[in-house]
Image 1 (cartoon, rainbow, N blue to C red):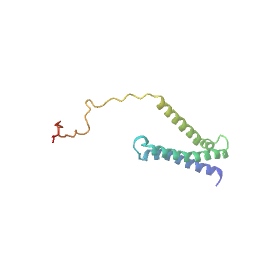
Image 2 (image 1 turned 90 degrees about the vertical axis):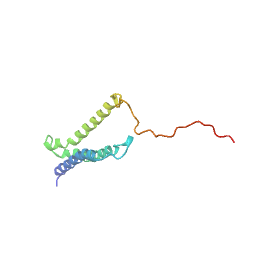
Image 3 (image 1 turned 180 degrees about the vertical axis):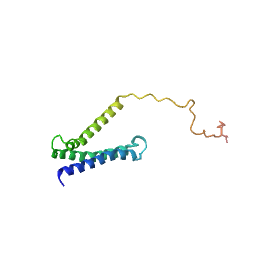
Image 4 (image 1 turned 120 degrees about the vertical axis):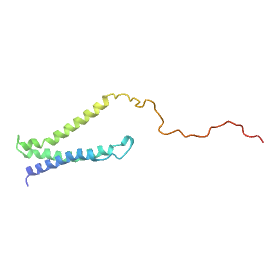
Length: 132
């Protein structure tokens, strides 16, 4: 097996890892509540992306084994280009959300009511205690 074949196989492995990161993000259930709800989904996404990034760097380095201007030499550049686009998109998303001002929340209920019925207690009377 020569280096070009290994580069092609690693390109396929990179593609599988890259796609798996999005699939695993979509199918992983959120397991926490409150502020950290859904963090495990993001963590799974980045773990798969790191694995794809390591393989992508190897593919990019192995692309030098192909002749200049060939199809597979260009294909070996795709992992680095995809990682750069993903990073630029992530930065743009964070910047866009940081600089945008959210709409104020309006009360959706016309007459807010308590969730449960109030507890009915006996009326309290103010009678003096008997004197001995």
